[in-house]
Image 1 (tube, rainbow, N blue to C red):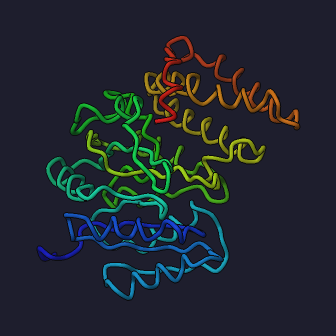
Image 2 (image 1 turned 45 degrees about the vertical axis):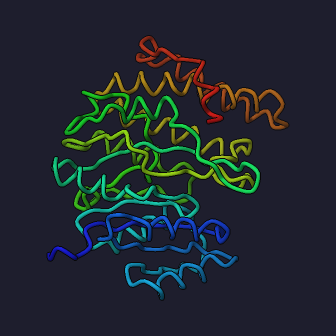
Length: 315
């Protein structure tokens, strides 16, 4: 490898996000670390997303376009990109989000220093204010997961890291993903994979730098904004269960307690509010069963939910 060879590949999946894809692409072009490749995966878009991706690939050889005629979901799109990575490091960026300009420089330099399996950084949410999306503050659970900087840590040493479940806040060694793939055909595919990363890693790093701006779309069409739909709820609860199960299987009881604390404080209240007026009683039944499961877990006794965190969901 020469000094100019790419060191990291970013997998950038998207479906029908033509309005936002240019900003994601621009955030890659603005990186202070220029030794990157990006695999742009169009997941069966019916808008101009594919054309935007193709234009980027034509204009800059660091971009590669992968077009899928049939939409198969975010997990499958990411997996397709994973199969094409040929650099020592890899990361993810959803095509409706943005990286901060120093994200790749900071994360790749950290891994070069530590030799850890992956590094996880902080992130903020961007919400529409007037005519523009504006980034909010780093939310408290993200701070707890990423600050202060910890190099060469583990989930047993730093159980609060388990709160940082999003794929696009991390850069990993490519070899670390040799048998790791995202679930396909479900929503919330990040949750279980993130906990597998934490529990499988010999060591990982966390840094307080804001790596990404996560767009909370005003049209309400993102997966994470559709929890009022029963199938989405079921995927969501299955992902929460799966993530907790991974941590429990690894003996990371403090991380389980930390996850339960956040779930009780932040995830359950909006679900219970939806359940109160949901026309399908199966919705409330599913939420009630999940609550009963949580209460029955041994780690529940060590959970310490901070209900003031709910307000920070609006940051």
